[in-house]
Length: 443
Ligand code: NAD
Image 1 (cartoon, rainbow, N blue to C red):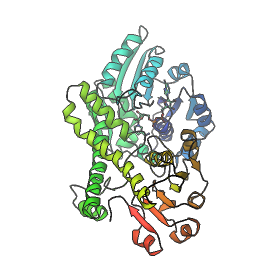
Image 2: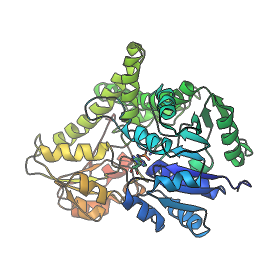
Image 3: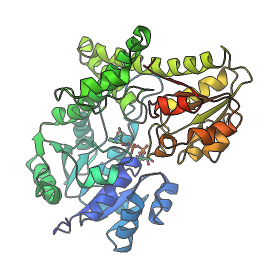
């Protein structure tokens, strides 16, 4: 699936999205220059080391550095001299003072690019942005480019899932490009030819529609998770079993079983901030009621975290003060070391604030967790984390935890009590081995 063209592209911003995009575009046959303002990240990527955990990415990175198709730099002059197609992959986190998206990195990146452009260039945004952003950026770019330069702008939202980044980038389930420029459309058709040839749907839309595709997809996924978690709340009150309920729902192919797993809810660097930024944008557009349901989606999600803390507290008699607690999981989901808005660390730190002596273990996210939550204790293995624990909480469903042996764990804990925050374990199996087992949404 290697492209025949030798197009040169730059990828601006080399975090989770950009590093994966850069390596995969090189894998498709293009010459790629990754650009970031973070020199440490550039040094690490240039040395063939992915500075985060993403299965399979390091192999693709190394292969393409070695074959000369992939390089990294912190120098924008190099980027504009090297390529005339630039992908924007910088971060768009939640603003610290509101629910809206912080677009300062996107604006800084287009400013850095625009002032250096000569001739005709294509800029394709991939970052998740509020609807309307690209039109504003087009005006911003037009005001900054030197005389004689010409910029064509498009927005191609990214749908990759952390943990499956390489696969999702090489074989996305659809490619969407928003643009009103035939130059952008032609460039994207050429760059995506290896994927279009495989039958991957390729859609051209206007700019606002493309921007909306991404945030509405995330709003839908978040809603589906919170829907089943709302059913978990009702199930807990009614003595029903939400796992059986979800299974029965999933057989209806209008509903489907994906994103219907009840538990501790969603987190990470995308869903929470994207639904909040979406609500903030709807407010600005004067259609706030259209998305008011997302406020409830967010609230249901937050309540699951509080409920997990309550279940654990109930199990040890009503107070965490001075009690030993073992936490399995720090990443926001398995197969990732991303701890942005991680439900696991939210719960762990809430318990520590209530006086619990909390020890956390995660197969990949410990370094990041230690930096962000230095007050928690950390262990280097599952057994070490649960040693002497009066209650254990499973908060990220890594395979290692799903496959844990309840007999082995029972030998080291103080009391065999577990809160399965992800409905990842077989309750009968654990109860039969002496554990007091509790989960969200189940009797
Ligand atoms: P990230 O924080 O991991 O990476 C962002 C990178 O941009 C950082 O390396 C940062 O140093 C760099 N940067 C900031 N300002 C810059 C500038 N002026 N010039 C060059 N580089 C700059 O974030 P991410 O998870 O990769 O997300 C990036 C965007 O992609 C966001 O809009 C996010 O919503 C979207 N997205 C992410 C994912 C995902 O799975 N992580 C999936 C789809 C979409």
